[in-house]
Amino acid sequence: MDFKLPKTPAVFVKNKSFRLSEVDPDDTAPFEHHPDEREDVLPRLQALRQRLSELQELLYAEHSRSLLIVLQAMDTGGKDGAIENLLTGVNPAGVQVATFKAPTTEELKHDFLWRIHAQAPKKGHIGVFNRSHYEDVLITRVHGMIDEKTCQEHYEDINHFEQLLTRNGTVILKFFLHISKEEQAGRLQARLDDPAKNWKFDPNDLKERAYWDDYQQAYEDALRHCSSKEAPWFVIPANHKWARDLAMSEIVVAALEAMNPQPPKVDFDPKKMVVK
Amino acid sequence: MDFKLPKTPAVFVKNKSFRLSEVDPDDTAPFEHHPDEREDVLPRLQALRQRLSELQELLYAEHSRSLLIVLQAMDTGGKDGAIENLLTGVNPAGVQVATFKAPTTEELKHDFLWRIHAQAPKKGHIGVFNRSHYEDVLITRVHGMIDEKTCQEHYEDINHFEQLLTRNGTVILKFFLHISKEEQAGRLQARLDDPAKNWKFDPNDLKERAYWDDYQQAYEDALRHCSSKEAPWFVIPANHKWARDLAMSEIVVAALEAMNPQPPKVDFDPKKMVVK
Image (cartoon, rainbow over all chains, first blue to last red; front, side, top):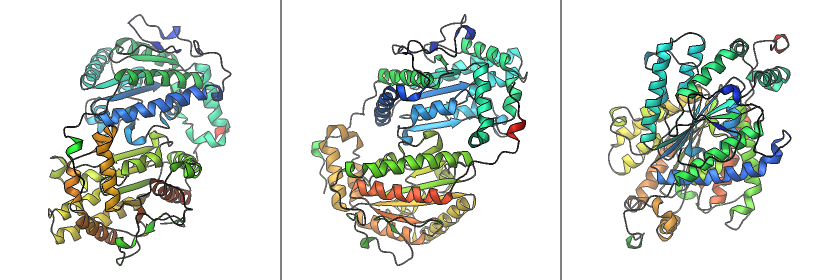
């Protein structure tokens, strides 16, 4: 993390004593209090988006480094919305969004990072992982599909993998969108009540919801083991969507500003070129 | 092409008697005359972009069909700018832009459609090809890397491949951004004159420019052989960027409107679901 962390409700996971329960999903400080309406923060969000768009263009021109944004959350945590609000307005030609679902039969024939590595962002691009390799220390752990030893090995593999990417010029930012169990209930119910949202509801989400505490525990453990200055985890209080979006945008823009991408120098003399 | 073609300067390549020389790269009719300033058409462009964003969201929700936009042009023809102006504002999570450069050693070990097929848009997505499989009947032909028989076979392979995609629910729109040789000279010179644009200049473009007429011939032939109602080629007069962007946006939105994507029906009764 080669940048000064902007003031947001986000919490950087510094060390192994980190406790998820100490982060309030409702927190919006130090942002000024806003009613829960996007309109109030729109000017700042739009300014950040505009700057993000300019920085992405420079990153693309430079063509030597990349930015990887990893997003994890409980169901209804707001991953899709956060991606949309962060990146709509940026040239899609410079963005790669990879969504990871349950691995396919083919993917299961390989190590758990195989399908992830294939989606690493190209030089000049902003990559987004909607879910990620962290699912392999979350859902698999909660449901006892891996034992403790394997889980510890996975943490190590993940840290090594992320180190490989950062050594190759990829700046990594990881965001856990932190909502409360009550907030999830409200969001699930909204998907049931609004016919236009019915298609977003998955009955299986109710089953997973029963494992809420186990997931929180698995998240806390993963965040503790896999956060560093080089590949930081941020816990984003995410009950309030406007604060979530603003916090993420501030951090992403600050990281890109610090990267300070520059168009490449050319190896010819423009004055000597003649267009016939 | 299951949609009524909106009124734009674009020309649909209907049959084998098509002549590229009959399309004027400067044409802007039936658009009202504007000075060459984007500002005048911005309101319409923004309205189209807004609608495109809504339609993309529905396409994503539906998750059963996709849209593929193929872009070809001479160097400086405006492919990057056209993609940026068409799609910035659409959620990047629903867009996949694939840029095809000279094939790699690995790609050359396969048939020419192998690397293209791998980038076909997923269900629910808008895919964009920045250059495409058509390079294999353009640059290869101009430089005598394929003979006439192979070229004819390639046309056939391309038509079969595009048919495969359309049968699987992909709507294909192909755009040739048509600029004049004089316009290219101006744009190349601008890249030399403006230090901020130097990095976009490739000395090799000057060599390719010498083959201008051969390229025009190869384009005309490819367009004649590979355009149909199912996978149409449009020639977009592209000397005026505002007219180019407006024409493309109008056609893409019209195509998506005709697809009329709908959120999927759910197979559970929302009223019977209980969130505990």
